[in-house]
Image (cartoon, helix red, strand yellow):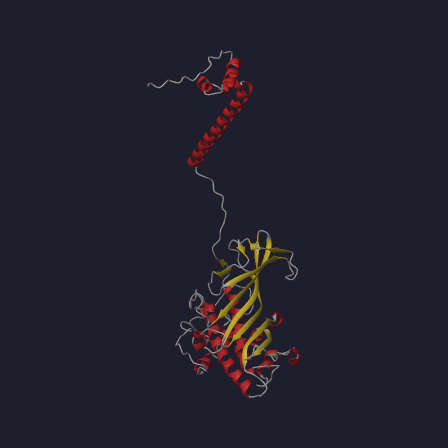
Amino acid sequence: MIPINTEFYTNNTALKYTVTKIWQGDDPHAPEQLLGSLPYLNNPLEDCSVSGITIEFEGIDRSASQIAIQQWGARLQATLSCRVDTAGGWTTMNMTTSYDYNADGGNTAFSGRNETKKASLWWGESLLAWYSIALTNDMHISNQLFYENQTDTDPIYKGHVWFQTNESNISSKEDVEGLNMFIPNCFFVPFSNNGVENKVYYCNRDKMENTDMVDKLIHAAQTDQLMPLPGIWVSAYSLTRAFYFTILTDLGQTKLKYNLLTDPDLLTGATKDYKAILDRPDTWGDNLRINNTGGLADYAFKSGDSTEKNLGVTSSVISTTFLCQVPRLKSRPTLVVSVIINTFVLLSALWKSYKFITDSFLLSRHPESMFCEGCAVSMPKSISDEASIASGQKSHGGDYKAIRQQDER
């Protein structure tokens, strides 16, 4: 059983997932049945989909070690769902997963990293790392340009970007290579020294006319407050796309028609900017000299690469520890001993019950049986006489006189 809030990895051991909801039915907004746990026994994860991916930008509200590596942090989180064929019918699990290249106090490297056996996930992790670096550098530069080129604004303090998956625009290689796989939404909060700030910057869909929004954000003016920070959107979109395909590869979605991490042509296009990212000087500087990209690809993929033959997706199952109740028949000697012990216990109980019933019946019919000669001596005379008469015996009692011996003088 896998209850809600369970954290798990797949057998690919790349990303960690958290179960948020378990339900049955066709409509996620009106499920036929809500479940508290999922009966699970190595069922493959099927029909997985990523509904959206968020990027949380954080400035100085992070640890000193994080700021020393990058002035800005960019944490990704995805909401997704998978279906599992169980004995009770098809069941859907809603889940979340996250990635943070510069996490606080933890190594975010995929625990199952393997360049040879899991080449697609190795390239996926490489894309996540390098585009995270590119995005945080772009955020630092864009925020400076946004603030310095106008007088009525404050520098951005933190931000939230949400990319909603546009499933209708993932039907060809051109769609994967283009900029319309996701619909962007954004909200940026300026710095305030008094805790009160009513001016915010956000992505205005009406101004972008709800079409080609990522492209319009890329080509907006540096000072546009309704299409802010044009310098971040190429990296943000590339990072989101890499996260999307890394998730589906980790979840073993073999039916995916186009996959950035398994198609050599798509992977070549996705990594073509590696050299520009690597050669660009750090805007903030790695002051702790920490290398979180060790062991990852630091070159662009090209046809004939040594990893090309190992690109691919395999079906995934949940890798976790299960508590199962398995009925087992005891051995014959154990059964014999158990029967003998139970028989003795039963016979002892029957004997005690028989004695209790018999004694109670006899005492109620013959109350004189409660007395003996020794007991009668210590009883009051009236009670002793009554008991003797009832038993047909004469009382041997007599008057008792106390004799006091005179003291010798």
